[in-house]
Image (cartoon, rainbow, N blue to C red; front, side, top):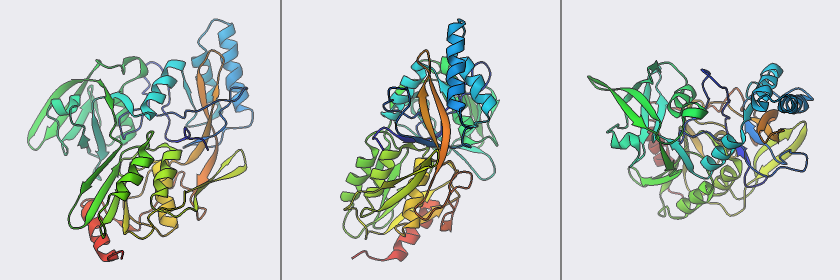
Length: 390
């Protein structure tokens, strides 16, 4: 697979009042990117959720766009209607400009307010992290603050994906400088804060020391270059220290980067298999990874797609103890096609599986040790029990 292939949840593009679905991590939408062949088809897939589209679906969508263009109508809207009729749940249509925006997000640039959201067990939405220097940070928003509403819409009980969609905004109002009002709560204090979205860059990989001889490598999304950052971080971990690979809230990204990250901990071998319209293919790690250092993968319900692919590989191959809560369960394969007029349609064509043959789509990955609150502390305790790698 090329270096621009993506295992990531799509943004479903809909106009008017329908929300644009974008997934957490960096509060940016992602889309499969890469080269297209002479027929306008991308030569490698991306893995998102949904059921395989029926045979001829791609031709139907393309014909709908062509006919609309000839009639002087919107080819994007016509293609969207065709995707909706097909029953392809995660099929999506992107205008040319939207697709370019998504490519930028995969390169680590995005428009947003600079906060990460997580859903607690009781349905509350809390701020998981705030990017330094971002509009959220400048407004004084802190990790642990409760997010109660976005532009007047209550968010309690909503999936994180929907909350991020509200934060990000529809395509036409998601530019830098556009305003978004947040309803917040901290202890007994409740207030509203109006932020203006800004162009930000992602720090997709951060490294810090935790208690004892533990290094935490936090991967927020598999944007371009993140796999090498993980490998570099592992190489700098002090001798005898264990590693927590924190994939909580990781919404996926470029599959090539997830495979590179797997190569930091595996000495070659299978990472995942996938099918494209029945044709079986495989992904392999590079040789030479650190196979002896104690490793815990930390996951939650916001761990999606490429992050689930990586987690499944480490778990199946006995390389990591997985701690946390069940992952999201998004693992089907889509391929993009260029439509008349320059827009792009993403249509589901298959699914991927872990090295042992498990299907992730709709099921997620069950951790070896369930932990919700104090998950990092539990991970550190597991590492202490794994012993000195020497």
